[in-house]
Amino acid sequence: MTEPRVTFEAFLEAELGSLLRFAAVLTGDAGLAEDVLQEVLFRATARWDSIGRMDQPRGYVRRMIVNEYLSWRRRSWRSVPAGTGEDVSDRQAPDIGAEVVQRHALLAELARLPGRQRAVIVLRYYEGLPDAEVAHVLGCRPATVRGYAARALAALRVDSAAPRPRRQLRTEAGTCPPGTPT
Amino acid sequence: MSTRNPHMTESQTRRSEDDLRAALASLEQLAPSRESVLGPRTRPRRRAAARLRVVAAAACMLAVAAAVVELSTHTATTPGRTDTHPALQQAILTAFDSAAGMVLESRATVSGDGTVTGRTVSWMGPTLPRPGTTARYRFVSTTPGGHPRSELSELYTARRPDFSGLGARFVGSGGVTRRITTVNYSTRTWTSRPTRQDAIVSLADDPALLRREVALGLWRVSGHVTIDGRPALELVWKASPATGAWPVGSPGRNGALRRTLWVDAHTYLPIRQRIQLGSGSPGPFFAVTADYRLLPPTPANLAMLQPVIPRGFTRTHGPHGAVPLPVSPFL
Image (cartoon, rainbow over all chains, first blue to last red; front, side, top):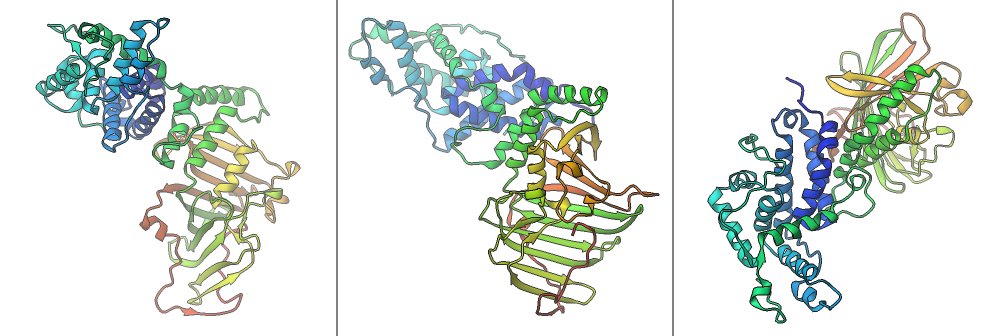
């Protein structure tokens, strides 16, 4: 058996910061992000011999995070981070910038999206993944991703530009780690 | 699903993808700290799972790895240094605590003067019982060839590990009635009776003692090794008669007792402990090497804590009906 290309310690040193942020954006809740990340890191340590030999360990761990988050959502736990959109709108005042208020309202609406739709939005617009890679992370077809995205954007009243600009952040397209992380 | 703010116009409620990206990026401020993810928990989990605390130990390696390197360097270059780095100490304690509800399996080889004289296997569950809760300990000794000699099973109420004099062999009861079951294979007898005596566990099988000693800083890292292919940290016991940290009643009070502990370099859970008494030739006149496994408390593993009475054995009564054969000076 060959040694992992990267040790777990080195992986954490290099990637933990971005994984913390990704988990926070994905879940919209600091506590849930902490729980999800702990669960994922726990499992990752046990399987690091295989994960560490992958071309893109971060992509695999990110996929584990998404799956763990969706698993939490399926267990009917629901994240409500900042009240409802109506509540936020009611708090508008002249000395509060409209942009901030609208952003809070948007975040509240994001929190009410179904888990997979939210995951698509985060992977697409925060991680900057192309739909094909989002599909790989979620284990579905790109057409399904586009469907999730369309419904989410409609619910959020976001006008989608065409063609969609693609930010290539921390992504290494073209590599698909084997297996389904859980 | 979509909410409409009655105070806004339709054009005001439309958003761009950039608005969405900015909103998502603003959530980064919710990112938990490294310490909250890698360190001990300070708030209740939404989903109780004690095993998750293992990750605290496993992932503490960011801080601990550096500490170990530093410590190893110091121990190699600074003779007499005996401090345990706080980060490493905490990681080991956290690992122990993470396994508190598990079953500790200990398989030991006992030798004298370099010759194997017997083997033992024991189970303790829970590994770190809370004071006042019920715990079980089962200890089976066999010949070097694996034939059973005796068995001791104890059901007791754990007491607070005060370790006065570090007499950790006495782990429970504290005056509370407990039950002890013994099986003697040489006489084919067994007994099971209540007793008010303190429960006793082997020195090699006492995780509460190990944890207490780590907390007291009585172990220091002496190096990195590989055990059965697993990276491990080697720790040596630095207690001496002067510290008073001898197991009560052990021959160590008057002899050269040496103990070495190995913990997994990733999880910091105990892997093995070696206890040596004396330094005779060809080897210590007594030595026990215990290999540890931490088992989840499944029904099958919990069943290992139950006494096993072979068919055809005769039950005897009285306090000395079936006394296990001693296999070591520590039990």
